[in-house]
Image: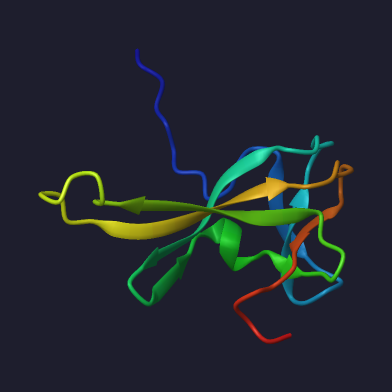
Length: 111
């Protein structure tokens, strides 16, 4: 019998929990090495920015342990295609301890 896949809003080593920074945050359930790419946190079509659960619960820090890495997808190589959007992946810039909150330095929002 084939294995049934269920939707997971966050990668396995992460969980949403109460934050000492603001409301809820994203926390490591286990040690995470520097350079880990957790996948898409934000997606932009035109002027609209959409947050995934990963992007919706990440809190600000002036000394962050993660950063959003921008990837741009465009039709510049094939004018017959009609797409132009950006996405950001959440990547660790420091090793993170089990139980530690993941943070980024906000660039789009006033803190």
